[in-house]
Length: 401
Image (cartoon, rainbow, N blue to C red):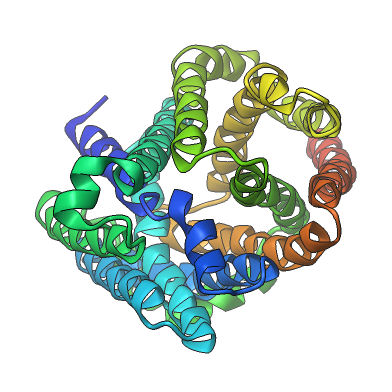
């Protein structure tokens, strides 16, 4: 593993920590402002809309060169959005600043992944993507743990007044500014961006029309599957609150999922890659995910099943993330990985927009409905992936003629 990859992995780890400090306190912050629960989904959806629009734009800009500038600029925009979201005290403005946060963070999310791909060979790309996903997941888990801890710990409450949950977002915004500076110092462009210099920002969106049709179907399956996974991830936070579990209990649970993801990337993913049956494994993962989620949220002992059966879901989700990124990146060209990963980010974020909005209304009706909806999304994603698999087979048969 070269120095550049190690730097990006460390950056992604700390980004995961910083960007998830506010998540364990967000449901209580929203509730404390007498905002309905469905707005929790709207806030997250607007952030995802920012990701949808920002991904292709930052991707094309990054392919032109000077990635570190765009990453750092996006991170500063994210800090502004997070700070204002907590302190503006107006629902309409909170929606706007969530959008701004999403637009800003899409720069580093898109360009760090493309940076890894550019500095990886075809043989070790999947391995590096696996470590990247594990680093961010572990960081996110630590962020949840730390965010929940500082909001309840007497020392932080006494000296930093973190019982005012807005202060947690202030801390996050300040740390993220430091993170932006570190990114600018440590990231070095590789000089392979010349090919993309003639590309305009609008081309980032036009690329969707020009993409391989099989890849487009795969991207739509990614959207559906993302609707399922994001609803589970985000409404599990609210579910913990409604079951009267503390913020620190939520942080501990998410931390455990991070450790499981790290183990998956270190041990399981390298074994899966050797099988070289990526599409079959991706298909199996969606069916198994649907079964696990259906069982877990019907259990009378939900905390026990979350720490046991649900961890199998965490494992296979970590495997899926690596396999789908690797498949999509195989369609990229030298110097244009930012553009294709930006399009990936857009399809991913569409699911992150639709999921929380629909999920918010379903959760208000009955909490279990949002998780059942995720099961349906995994099944629909599976159907589209069958189409992808058949198209791949057809292409192979045509080439063999």
